[in-house]
Length: 190
Image 1 (tube, rainbow, N blue to C red):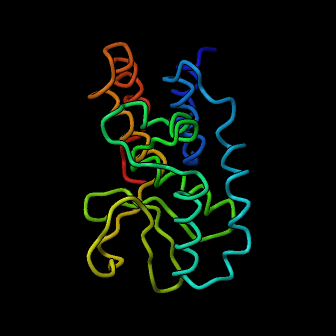
Image 2 (image 1 turned 180 degrees about the vertical axis):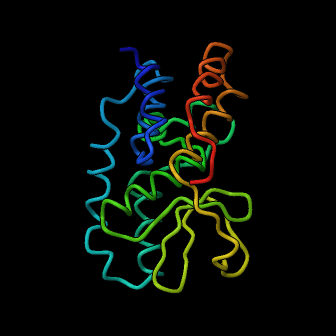
């Protein structure tokens, strides 16, 4: 089975996880795809173990530290390759949506209550407790976000956004593959 067919099948799965979706996209579009982004995420999440016992602000700070000081991720919006998780992890040049996904995956692995969200038109890793949210990402939002301002994005929605961006910015062959894969991703709200 081809990498494209594998990705097409995986992206249609109802219980898809963010790391699985992004690894499938990387395997489809990267010439030198990382063997296992999940192993790199597992390793990078280790310093966060124990952070779940901290207060929300400290959890968000620990996660931000892991993204910026440990993984050294820098936001990149112009290079379509920065939309792929393997490129982001290996070059440290990551589209903000990949920073949000990577942050969520690090937090999830360490037991933090996180999700990928959109607030103010920007992607974020959202860390939450019973009543509050903290946004971790490369932009700023004035004031404290209200829960009604943050929209959760499931793995299908994020994969759809990544594929849409690749179809607009990548060379023609990759843009065509992205367009075909878009048809495999459920577009209903998750």
